[in-house]
Image (cartoon, rainbow, N blue to C red; front, side, top):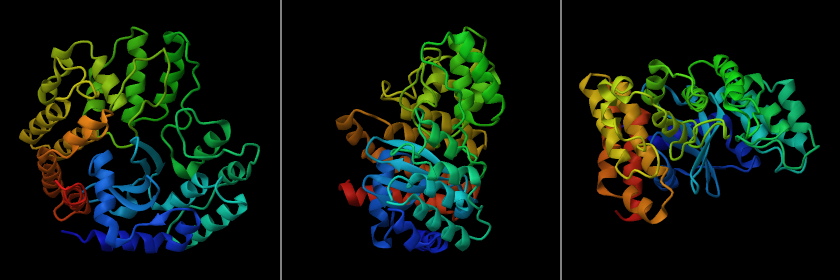
Length: 373
């Protein structure tokens, strides 16, 4: 099993520990890694490797078997709520993301740019800060912007995160007023989603808007969303009366709820979802076990990547539960350790001895040590 302490240490050496500290992120201490993995795994699926923390938030790398950490997306996770926010597609654009994220915390915004530029100089192949990003960071018209992107971000934050080096999938989603007629909202959403192909959260947004506008949805798009791993965001990409709402793993929940003909659209490995539209929401306590059944069906087909995505979604669904008392009981249930081992085994099938498998196994160990189960 790969040494995660070494992996985190090498990543921190690459980006610069002192630079990270100056941007108010505390690099993960190797001695604290099990605890950090436990806190993260308590909130979300065991697919994220923490590299830095601040209070209840963590800067994490999304792992996948066979993919290096330096080529993997970076996200910011609030482990109290829990919530996930996209940061950047790889370490090459991490300096830009950190620059935006911490712009309002330092006395002089120019200091943030200077620190980020030092990180760019350290990281091989790092992308330079674009003029657009610099303009947004130095814009002091608002004391509270720019900051981490969220669905209700202001103008300066949207400008910053739409910088080309960040490839942010959601940042330019249309500002559709809350009470816009669904058919009118659909025209704007359709055009935007067409410009960002292959993003399941956006496909889900389109499906949810089509459903509200009484427009037929395609089986292919619906199945593509349900087959994907939910790792970029837990809440809805955009809110409004013009779309079907979701909760829990929100966009997946909205997608399953709007399925028109379950017997036709949920064939094959998705059959366990028929008759259970709340599987991804917090209303269905059996939802995680149902997603494990979907994963088992993918495994029967020999689709180990499909199995891994569904197992991770089952773990994410447990972590997204908002009923604290019940959530704690379920999260630390012995079955959770079994689920995490199944995730690790699926990783091993795809690429033996991967960091992704080690993260799942060590997260299970960390949960046991930290919470005494």
